[in-house]
Amino acid sequence: MVDAAKPAGETDGPPGALYLARALAALGRRVLLISDSFGLPLLECGVDRWQLGRETLVEFPFEAGPPDGAGRSSNAGENNPITDGWLHRFFREGPGRELSHLISTERVGPSHTPESLAAQPREGTGDAPLDLFEAEVPAADRNACHNMRGLDITGYTAKTHRPFEIAREQPRPIVTIGIGDGGNELGLGSIRWETLREAVKFSPGARIACRIATDHTILAGVSDWGAYALAAAVCTLDGKRDLLNSWNGDGQRDLIEALIRETDAVDGATKLRQATVDGLPLETYLEALAGIRRLMGHDP
Image 1 (cartoon, rainbow, N blue to C red):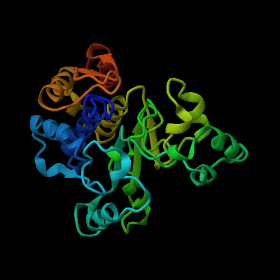
Image 2 (cartoon, rainbow, N blue to C red):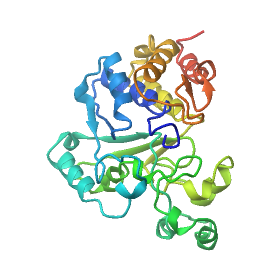
Image 3 (tube, helix red, strand yellow):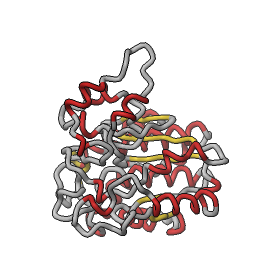
Image 4 (cartoon, rainbow, N blue to C red):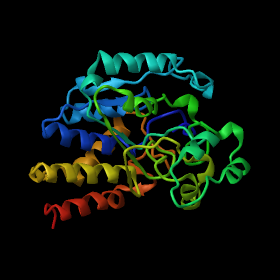
C-alpha cells in the first residue's frame, strides 16, 4: 500500500498465503514464502506465530535496492539484471531447483501492453481490441504495476512476476497458480483484458489489468478466501481434511490482529492500520472461511 501514511504490506494476501503454507507444510511439502522487503515483515510475523520456521522465508530483491519514497524510478524499465541474476541462482543453484508449483496470492503484476494484448488467446472471439486499448490506456500506464485506485506502484513492487514468466524455461516442470480479486494481480492475465475492463467497474480496470497469465487462476471476492479454499481442497484431496480442525476463524483473527500490532500492515481499502481486510470487518471477512469449513464438515 503506497498511498497510505508510508508504504506498507496489506492485510489481504499474507493471511491467505500463510494459511496455505501451513497446510502444505503439514502435508509434508517443502514450502517457501517469497516476498519483497515490504511484505516480508508480515510473513515473518506469521511464521513465528505458527512456528513454520524462518528458513521458509525468502526475500525477493529490488532492481536498485528498496525504494525510499522517490517513486517508480528505482524499479521501472525492462532491464532486470539483478532480478534475473537472482532468479538464475535461485532456480539453478538454490531451493528453486525443487519447486513443483509457484503460487501467487494478491500480488500485483505489470499491466498490459499492445503486444501482450495481441498475444492473449481469443479463439472464436475475434481479434484483440487494440484500438480500444490504445484509446483507454496511456503509454505511461502500460507494463506498470498499479493498485486498485490506478496509482502506479511499480517503484514499490519487486519484479516478482519474473519467476512466472520464466517458469516454463526451467528443466523441472513448474505449475503456476494465481489468486486475485481485483484484476491487477499475477495470474489475471489468463482473463482477456476486455473482460476485466468490463468486470472491474469500481476501479480503472482497463489500466490496471495484469498481463501475467498462470496455468490456473483462482478468483475470489478477497484473495485470502481463494487461498483458504485452495488449502481446504488440497487437504481433502490428500485425505487429511482433519488438519483443518483447529485452523479456524479465531486463529486468523489473532493473526491479522498481530499483523496490525507488530508490523506496519494496513487495510488496502481504507489505508489504515486497523484489523480489517479490504474494508471488511473481521466478522464479515471470516464468514467465508467459516463457510469453507462448514463444507468440510468442521463448523456447525
